[in-house]
Length: 96
Image (cartoon, rainbow, N blue to C red; front, side, top):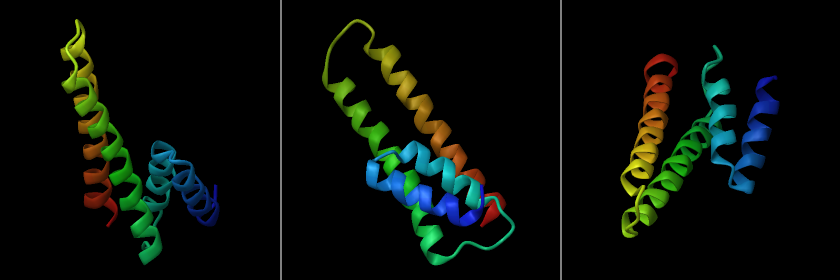
């Protein structure tokens, strides 16, 4: 997919609250050889912030409950947070 289509898809994903898809689109844009524009950089950070915020909210809900598989569910969310953070750090180190 070309750069403009990816950015357009990222904007649509943001409006729909689909931050995982937005991350995927902006990840592809960031890894292209051209430097990111200010708008693209903003979309990249909005995507990852939204994704992290969603996971943090999920973790807080689970942490506030007391049930049998709570620790297991918290660990899954923590692992997903680590994956998301590793992904954005990788983009920053390699592409920005």
